[in-house]
Amino acid sequence: MSTPNIPVPYFIVNHELKILETSNTAEKEFPVVASFLDLIDPGSKEKVIQLLENDDETSAEVNMETLEDKAVLYELFFKKEQMKYHVVTIKKSNNYYLVQKEINQLREQLELTNSQMTAFPFYEEQRGDSLKSKGTNSSIIHNKLNTIEEVLRIVRPDFIENYKSEYIDLLLEQVNEIKDLID
Image (cartoon, rainbow, N blue to C red; front, side, top):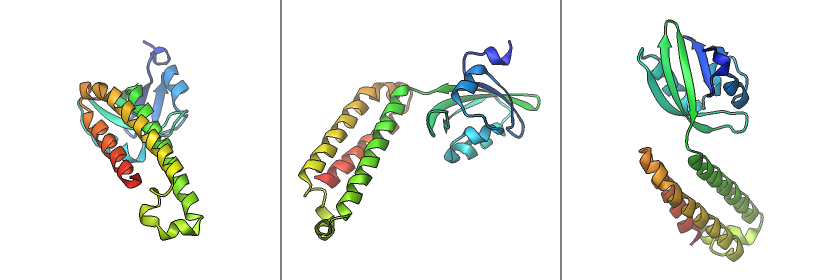
């Protein structure tokens, strides 16, 4: 089978992780880089390097940079053959990605709201409960948090199925902590 015709993102890399070949699907999904590590999120690079020290077939979940986003969760499957590695990448559940994106948007909105509040001196005096005093902003944020919480509860079974329920639990905990800050 010719490498370009493989229907999933597929890479052949050397022992230094320089990309030797890619599938057409990989070229459509990822930016052009010389080293496979350049596609890996900085927080996951060490994990990938350690995995490749094994001579066995192995797999790992890592965040990768795609043409569309800086961090998308992928399952990587590695197989060593002579001095090369065959790497197949499979994008993880889109539900997780959507939840992650919603949380990032909420975080950005919260930062914007906080920066707007610091522009007014009378909010500085009440910094401890400044979010409580903003009825409109507080209710908008609360509604968005409720939406995120609902989405998390909907996708939770998918995560439980993949033994990743701790991610949902962590996100729900974060949402509740933000709600507590507002209330």
